[in-house]
Amino acid sequence: MNTTDSGAGDLYEMLTYLLVIIISAVVMVVWLKRKNKRKNGKG
Image (cartoon, rainbow, N blue to C red; front, side):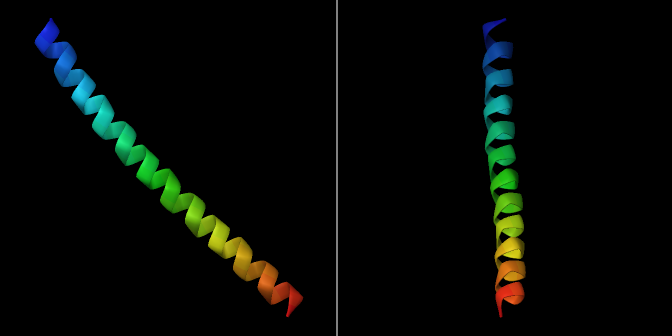
Protein backbone atom coordinates (compact mmCIF):
# COMPACT_ATOMS: atom_id res chain seq x y z
CA MET A 1 0.00 0.00 0.00
CA ASN A 2 2.84 2.37 0.87
CA THR A 3 4.55 1.82 -2.47
CA THR A 4 1.33 2.55 -4.39
CA ASP A 5 0.73 5.68 -2.32
CA SER A 6 4.24 6.92 -3.07
CA GLY A 7 3.76 6.31 -6.80
CA ALA A 8 0.40 8.09 -6.79
CA GLY A 9 1.93 11.00 -4.90
CA ASP A 10 4.72 11.28 -7.45
CA LEU A 11 2.25 11.27 -10.32
CA TYR A 12 0.03 13.81 -8.57
CA GLU A 13 3.02 16.10 -7.96
CA MET A 14 4.01 15.85 -11.62
CA LEU A 15 0.43 16.58 -12.75
CA THR A 16 0.18 19.55 -10.37
CA TYR A 17 3.45 20.97 -11.71
CA LEU A 18 2.22 20.54 -15.29
CA LEU A 19 -1.11 22.18 -14.42
CA VAL A 20 0.67 25.17 -12.86
CA ILE A 21 2.82 25.61 -15.98
CA ILE A 22 -0.22 25.40 -18.28
CA ILE A 23 -2.23 27.88 -16.19
CA SER A 24 0.73 30.27 -16.06
CA ALA A 25 1.11 30.10 -19.85
CA VAL A 26 -2.62 30.70 -20.39
CA VAL A 27 -2.68 33.63 -17.95
CA MET A 28 0.39 35.15 -19.63
CA VAL A 29 -1.17 34.86 -23.10
CA VAL A 30 -4.47 36.36 -21.94
CA TRP A 31 -2.68 39.18 -20.09
CA LEU A 32 -0.52 39.97 -23.13
CA LYS A 33 -3.60 39.95 -25.40
CA ARG A 34 -5.43 42.31 -23.02
CA LYS A 35 -2.36 44.58 -22.82
CA ASN A 36 -2.14 44.70 -26.61
CA LYS A 37 -5.86 45.44 -26.93
CA ARG A 38 -5.63 48.26 -24.38
CA LYS A 39 -2.58 49.74 -26.10
CA ASN A 40 -4.32 49.62 -29.48
CA GLY A 41 -7.46 51.23 -28.05
CA LYS A 42 -5.48 54.08 -26.48
CA GLY A 43 -3.23 54.65 -29.49
